[in-house]
Image (tube, rainbow, N blue to C red; front, side, top):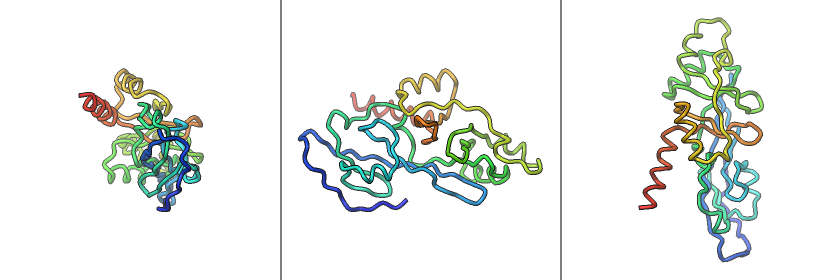
Length: 207
């Protein structure tokens, strides 16, 4: 993803506007033919949803753009983090195509030191997740593909509060939780450590 560095100057429509840094995040899809970055998004503080980078680049509130973040001008009341799951989505999430050969999926996860990865279809919609142990068990099966090892997964809306996300992960003993938008497209995967760090920063700020 290449972003320009030129700034778009926003007409002053209120002295309360603040500049907010919006980190970009990517879903990097691994297909049989190679790696493809299929979705680049940011969490928009105005719409409170995951927005595509192109839509943000055309926004008249945009000030700056880089490969790592967009800088947006928003009213002060919206500048603060709202505490929803979409804000925790990491910069990059590796996902596997359902038709990827099992051996290739296993090798990729092992090289990346990942114990699991989400699986999506051709429309980038979440199908489930795969574990390295499940992939390893199918390595000797002729023609086996990643979809043969898919297990159900609990996915949550980007609008779920982080408190609700923490309670869900605790009650179901989840280490990782996929975050999806309203169309069911995967935005990224949040870990229990991401949630703990959010609460830790919040408590530190209150001291």
